[in-house]
Image (cartoon, rainbow, N blue to C red; front, side, top):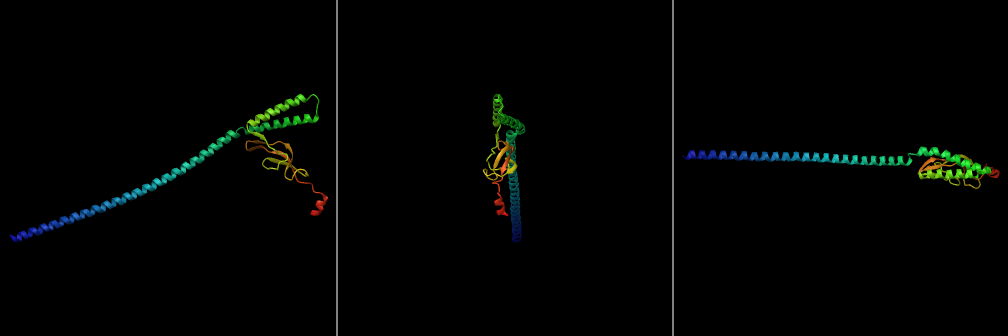
Length: 205
């Protein structure tokens, strides 16, 4: 009886140890599995964060490109409105030239009986120039001004004791601006400075 009881106790102890080991292994397995899932979640979260950052950067670039496009389109639209009639206005300039020449010729000849005609042409010219001014056309100042290659077209260079070098002496044809753009450059003669005397030539040589 004592031996049988000892064997029974020993078996119970073995069974208890086995159960304890199995429970310990189960806990360890669950801990490893939880850590693996946590690492996987962290990696997924990191990947999604990088993806969101890349998408945000792409959005910012697209927004900047769209803003640039919008500014360019608006500028082109403004210029189209501002200079859309440039060619038409340029075609009217020779008419002004001819009217000014007719008035000058009539005044130079001083033909009797033409005063009323000259006054009529002057009035027409004034109205035409005023109409062009409403569209932004303005005459370019030339005589006595410093020569500006953008606004003046030099057709001759002549010595002058009264006009400084590289300044406009005379204007052969008026130039015009359309707002801030040159519609037609003025045709001018430019001072080459005082004429060189024989004494100056001999000093130089």
